[in-house]
Image (cartoon, rainbow, N blue to C red; front, side, top):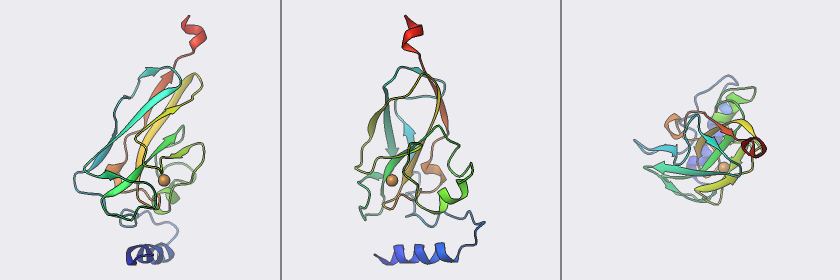
Length: 156
Ligand SMILES: [Cu+2]
């Protein structure tokens, strides 16, 4: 455990429950860095399995646990409110992201995945997190996009 992690832990302990000041808990994002969906746009119609290519500019991708400044890994928030919103939203900025069907981690440093999604509308948000799965600053989060997975039976 390095000094920065110890410091973060101390800060988390000292934070009041209502705090949302989280940007300084993660490693700082590089200036001008951002994440983006390479191949998907808001409102896109797709078929399942859905290819999702995840891009990052200004920072490097590294497996979770890699202690190196300026790197992190991708997460997709699937079919849930934007990061920081919803019932557990406040915690998401402060603590590391949970891993469940709505929070998908790419902790091996993947930049591409395929999602098996049922027909209908789905929301996706890309979130870049540090070695401990804590989101970087706000610019390392995309807008929530909505895609429509076409029903293969109806398309015929
Ligand atoms: Cu993660």
